[in-house]
Amino acid sequence: MPINPERDVELLKRTIELARMALARGDLPFGALLADRDGEILLEAQNTAGTLRDRTGHAERNLMTEASLKFEPDFLEGCTMYTSAEPCAMCAGSVYWAGVGRVVHGLSEKALKAIIGPHPDNLTMDLPCRDVFAAGQRPVEVVGPILEQESAAIHQGVWTEL
Image 1 (tube, rainbow, N blue to C red):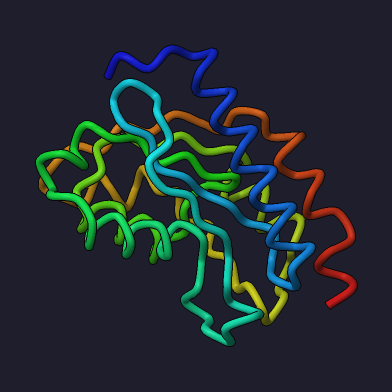
Image 2 (cartoon, rainbow, N blue to C red):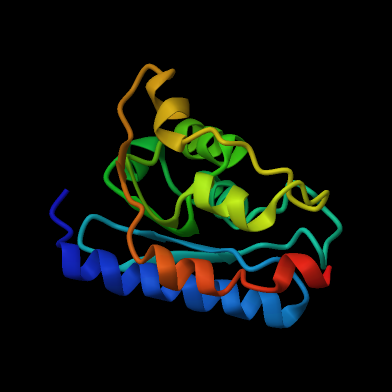
């Protein structure tokens, strides 16, 4: 895909801002966006698990639901999902089933689990999205973790205050 590394960083920084906005609204700090093959933002989403009381309201799953309703899989194959943290198994599954061809993430699932611990509001698995995608029948490119410290910073103190 022709998106360059500088644009990847710019778009990933936007997901971190979306995560901050989710936290300010009363949700967990996760944000995601979908960009086309030219790096233009098509859709943005935030975690809604708190405000909507939907434990599946992860930013990435919310984004993939909207994307799959709006775009055809052939188009989504050329798109990239950017997310402030590595997609969990559920969210990676939604990326796969929606048909998105590339994922760029900040904080790794392993690092997120280390920050959160056994918190009941996010029982994070140590299951990299690459492993989920590898079990599928079509390729999904994964780039990350990048900006991991910046992505981790928005989680500091959040999980002890809940």
